[in-house]
Length: 580
Picture (cartoon, rainbow, N blue to C red):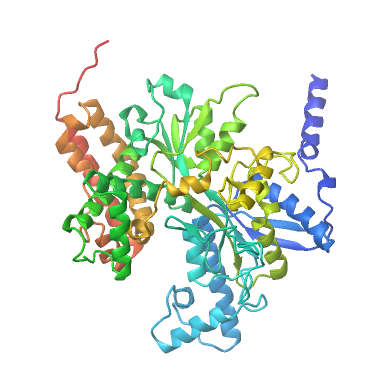
């Protein structure tokens, strides 16, 4: 017994040393450069980029670098923190300068458009003219990771600044000496970089599933489309993440709505060529939401709006099947691999990473990831330089490293390969064009040089980000302005009233299913009618003036009432008794 106790004590004492990184991997000492980065990235990404950048910097500039990672949660939490920190810093700076700070100072300086009153406009302009760490700063250098929505918002709010100021980026970063595009500014409707944010890796959104759990549930065909997850067999077995906490997951839900909009148009007889032609016509006349064009078919816009509503209805059905909504997007594939859930909606690299980590050597994976058919665009994962960065020069070097061929290798090279990660296979899609097949002979040769070291077959159509991007045309007019409203709608409709939704759905299933309960389904799928009837148009017009807290409170009350009514209606039906 005494021996066992001594062994336990010795093990506890040794644990910190067992899991401490080998000091030979990082020769940084106090006084050497330090970089402060806020990020939603996981530990594997943080560790690999910290080690690789330090080694790269030591080789190129003669000093290693320590990265101080600030992990605050998802991009939503990061954005709230940045807004509060910049407002606090700006308030202190302007008061020191004897400038009046109004009660709504944070709202004024972070407005995405110039204010109309002279005093507010002057404050707004002075905030954006200041990029000095001793005056206005959040105390951090870089915002690394998350989706373009939040980085674009940070850019519009003035939280971030162009990395190279008014100068052009270094040659070889975005284009080469022959004007060959190495990193596009976007593709098929998605924006991959702006003047103050730069895509570093690419992501699609899809479904991870556990083959054993599907078999247990009697599901013979793995999910291939978003609609497949609405099958009642997934009731209580679907893992979802909170879109109000994660910008990436909010983007995944937007993809579902985009897909249903396109499907509605195609079903109505419109072709992809029609859609491209009509959307171009609308953009040419700088159309506002809902504006009609005499050259467009009368039912085009109406069909689009019906598709938006169908997308909302599909998300509601998926949520009715949900086991939970997690605060962490990374939890989804982990729980699916453990059998806690049968399937889940996830970001591609998280699904692939978990599939690899949970598969024993020489065995077939029990957890699979699939890009849904015509179900997702390819989205960028940007990096931005924060206003008033304390270590600006070093931060710009990090941006250049991440976007360079050396930094891009970390995303998909196998651990231990030349230039690859040391320990973790990150299983992400690089953004540089040279990592994928190309008709350009220079880019093709570069791809062939990378190919032997890649974790994924990036030449495979299922993994080729550029080919995937061409298979789904994201149209911002359909859902981009709805992004924030959709987040709040899902929260009220599926999370804050989630217990009532699931109870109503189970009652409907127990009493014959959706087809046998048309009245209950109509109650379940009703859209809010207060303070305004919610439609594609009103979501971005009427609701723009309603305080967010009021909207959430009103919508949640509406949905809870509707779901209780739907449950009561379903229970009036005679249940179908399954034969044993």
